[in-house]
Amino acid sequence: MRNKYLILFILVISICFETFSQVNILNAKDPADIGVRDDMQIRQDEDQKLEYGYVDDRDILFSKVIWEVIDLDQRVNFPYLYPIDTMVVGKERRPLIYYLLKGIERGDITKIYDDGKFNNKITYDDFVNKNTDFQGLSYREINRRGRDVIDTQASGSRNFFIMNNEIPLGAQYDSIADLDEYFSVLSFDQQYDETKKDELQAYENTRDTALMDWFQENYGDKYVDTYEFTYDMIDHYKIKGIWYFDKRIAELKYRPLAIAPVARQVLNKKEDAGLSPEERTPPVEMFWIYYPDARNVLKDSYVFSDRNSVVRKSFDELINARRFHTMIYLEENMYEDRKIGEYITDNAFQRLLESERIKEKIRNFEHDMWSW
Figure 1 (tube, one colour):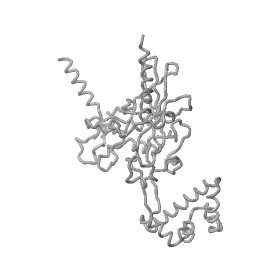
Figure 2: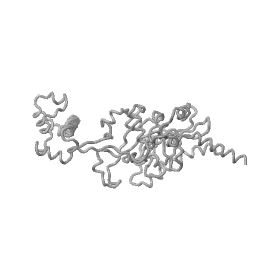
Figure 3: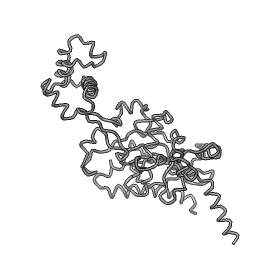
């Protein structure tokens, strides 16, 4: 009987210390107050990220770095994907990608890279200005009606349309004395000169941006189509972490090192519309974030619980507790960290078995430590 009351007491205490997924919902006098904590709640809020603590390299008996895929088609991983339409839910419910993008935009997350090896650091401006493999969060193009106008006025030549309408291209190109001659030479010569492809591409990007700005300024959105990044374009996440055996506490532990959202390109959104997932263009890594740098953002980013809406856990808690199902696609190895798909080709089932073999190898190390 005493144990029964003890369990009940612990349960009540744990509920009292839980933060609510919809803060202040019972006391709000206005819908705008839902999710807004008062001063007392803020002072009593003891939610802090659990510090990792210092681990001496001499205490690590074994370690292995692995890269895994968090498949968002699996139900257990749905909390990382949904909601994809934030207009039909409350402002307190957002997917993981929302918090990552907001953290980068605000400057709260600064350690951003274009690969999981942390070789090339990038900035938010690099990401937005399409200087990475992922070509930005928005894409504009001149639609059929706009192309018809160019065909009518300039026989399909965007260069002649630029000159005829005196559309400025900035100081770099406006300083050219004879635009007609420059455009003709630029377009004709550089498309056959491999060394000048980047220069030609930079010019064409500047020209097309100026054209779209001119169309929108003079005609609104009638001649320009705009495509925006949406949360349903996230295909999966990649996560890099390290398993290590700490001999001081005699325990095998896991530490996340980096996370990357993998999404379909916005510039392919038009072509991918109506196609099956297998027919769409392959998704691309948006960026890699050094995970410890994102913890301050993720500790305040809460996940909706499908079982009990009074319970609120942060994304930081879920990731550190490995509350997801993954498949290993790479483990550090002497073969220049080759991926499983590079030595097991055209056989998805065998790749899955290889992933499970690597997991079992790591688990067996801890098990063997206690074998006599």
